[in-house]
Image 1: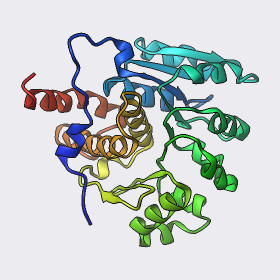
Image 2 (image 1 turned 90 degrees about the horizontal axis):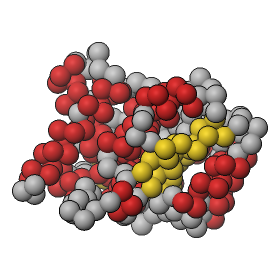
Image 3 (image 1 turned 120 degrees about the vertical axis):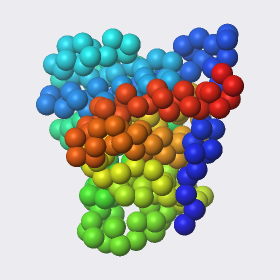
Length: 284
């Protein structure tokens, strides 16, 4: 099976021209986090900031706003009361791309449907965003925008109505069939993450290690994909590049801290040297 290459991943990193401003690199709306899941929002938005999005707007319930905002001063925030989601719907048209689902909870599935029906920009659907559509997978067939889905094997099994063992027995087939059937880009996470396109292309990712098998790693990946989408990178390349660089950061992190002790937020500290390597190769 063909794999994502470093050259492919590096090609997604935009050259930052001298006359650039924050608008040049897009506005990413991260609809993430809920009570007890503030960390998911922080990891997703933190990764998006590290990957070059011009502005990261984090939409979250007012109860966790003080926690998240104290850790991410570079982001802006769309804060909403638990009982009223309208602020988020008003922020949606301003975005260049959207990430939905990291730590979102499944308490309000209708809010996921609202975003899917109203979103006019490329979208990353992760975690509880996926869990909320398990019984309404057909909603994907009517999306007017490119969507990147990022399930782990358990979420993939729920989407397909099968067992995790069946998913793992044919990871490439499961990802490719779903991507083509529902016209989405499917990132099936795990050892040898598979990235499948609606056109039938499927690539395996060669980077990463078992030290990344921790809660929070997927939140980082969703934010990375979203950042590339916000900057105008084509959806399939955005997914492939983010998966590759996410794994590369994990490999750097394992070499520095060990697979046993590394944590997802440690990967954020590895991204700068990866992007520095890419920039230096261009003569910056």
